[in-house]
Every structure is written in structure tokens, then in C-alpha cells.
Amino acid sequence: MYKLICAVQNYSWGKPGSSSTVAALVKDGHHADCVDEQKPYAEFWMGVHPNGPAKIAETLEDLANRITNHPELVGEHEQGTLQFLFKVLSVNKALSVQSHPTKEEAAILHKNDPVHYPDPNHKPEMAIALTNFELLCGFRPAKEIYRNLKGAPEVLSLAGGSGELENLLGGDAAAKAALKNIFTKIWSSTPEQLAEAVQKFISRIKNEPSELNDLMVRLDHEFPGDTTTMTSLVVGDVGVFAPLLLNHFTLKPGQASFLGPNQPHAYLSGDCIECMACSDNTIRAGLTPKFKDIQTLCANLTYAMSGPPIFAHKEVFSGVDLYAPPVPEFAVQSVKVYMFPLESEH
Image (tube, rainbow, N blue to C red; front, side, top):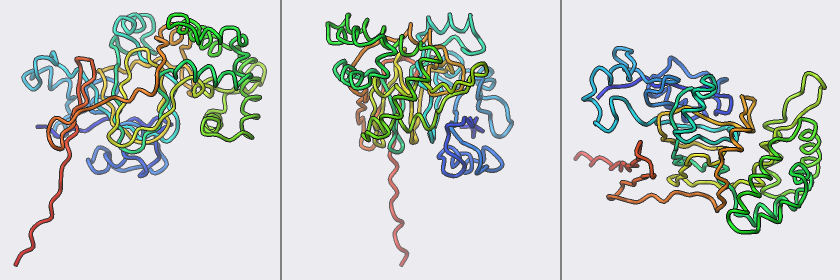
């Protein structure tokens, strides 16, 4: 068994300093000289992905190199590497509205744009809550989307009005086609259209408190948008509208959600562990200052509609839970370790 020095990602959405579980791991495991209280500690990576490779603590050799030279260290199914990437996340503010491609799509994206899609692999992933973990994931049932958009005329105007909305209540194929048209039109709005819609919408719902409205006001505060250099127009972030269409829910500690290919999602707050196929491919389309590939995301989504996708794990032994998603790269076991008091000496 090797002690590892693991990679830490200081993305802006991470929890700052010692408030972060990631920072606690860094400190307790001596993965860095110190914890900077002013710095966000977002992700702790355990794996061989080149964007954050783990190293052997004793020699500082890359774990990937050690496995390549000693393939007997891993099972044959790992094919001379690690097929998975294991992480701990500490989320202080929303991550981007995003999805992940299939293997076939990832290969094409990587070939055409290796800067933004750094590898040719897919990225199915499992999030398991360590604390209450708030997220958006998957499209809501059609009736909920219909109701939410009916009550948001500022947003519905970006989709061309209510004509397409009625088709959401049709058969499955018609509903998916309608949702694709609605989502694509909203997310493809011009800067001028988006600026006006966000301003009017947020101004109104600030005076109409509800769980949904409060969330969208919060997201607008976290992502107030950018000022265009040509017009000085403040353009809000289209991701502010995501809760109207995506399921909003909170996982309790131990609960999980599995995110398959082309499923829209955004983590909002809390700590979790995450396991995925070994990839760093993310198609972003909102709640981020990073590169957004709205056209690809809109084209690739499945547009399946359902309730919150909470993944059912099972207890395989007393104190041992198995999270086994329908992918070959990984499964996760949670093992409860019970501490018993030492007997008093007499």
C-alpha cells in the first residue's frame, strides 16, 4: 500500500480555508505545507488523470507511472491504469449548469477542441452526500416545467411565447421535442434579450418569496453576469433560469445521485464524494464565467423528464453499503467504522 500526495483543485466555487472538507484532508494528510484561509478548496482528486495526478508520497513519482511500470498493482479490468477518478468536493457556491458526453461524443469533441475537452472519455459520475448536498439534476416532470414557465412570462418570451409550451403535455416524443425547442431557444438568447429578461424576472420575484424564487435570486447574486465591452450592457447568466426546468433537491448524508451521459445538472452547496470514469470533460452552459458550449449541450441532452434522480444503494453486509451504477468503470462501497471505548484498567 502506498501513501499518496493527492491533487487539490482551488476552483472559485470551493469553500474557503478551514471551512472546507477538502482543506481538512489536505491538512490532515500533509498534501500541502499549509492551508490558506483566503483560498477556496474545491476538489480533492485521487487518481491518475493528467489534470490532477496523484503521486507516491515517498518518491513523488506519478501514480500513473508506477502503475504502468507495475501493472500487477491493479486488477486486469483496469487495463494498466485506473479507469475511475475519485474525488471529494466542498461546494460554497453553484457549479456550472453542465452535462457530460457519451464516449462517442467525447472522442469527437476532444478531436475538434482538445483545449476545452481534454480527453476522449465519457464521464458518468456518482455523487454521494457527506453533508446535506443541494443540487439541480435532470429535467423536472413535464407538468412542473409547464407550470413554472407559465408563471415566468419574462422567461417564456425567450422561447417565443406559449405556443410550444402546450406540446409539453403531449406524448413522450412530442414533449421531449417541445422541451428541446424551449430549452434551446432560452439558452440561445441574444445578450440584449437575456439582459432584459433576467433584469425583469429577478426584479419581480424578489418581491414574491418562495423556495424556487429565493434560489433563483441567490443564483443571480452569485452570477450577476458580465458587462459586454461593446455596449456596456450587463448581461445576466442564463443559468439563473435553470431551476424552472431542472429538479431542485437536497441529498441527505449517505444518499446519492447518479449522473449519466447528457443529463443536465449543477451542484449548489454542500460536501460530497464523487466517483466517475477517468475524465475531465464537461459541457458547460450557464452559472459560470468559463467557456460555455451552449450549442453542443442543447444538441446532446436527452430531454428525459422525471422526478429527482436519487440513486438506490444497498446494504451488502452490516455497516457496508454498495453504490453500483450501470457502468463498468466503478462502484463505491461505504464502510462504517465503529469506535468502541477502551475497557477501563483496574
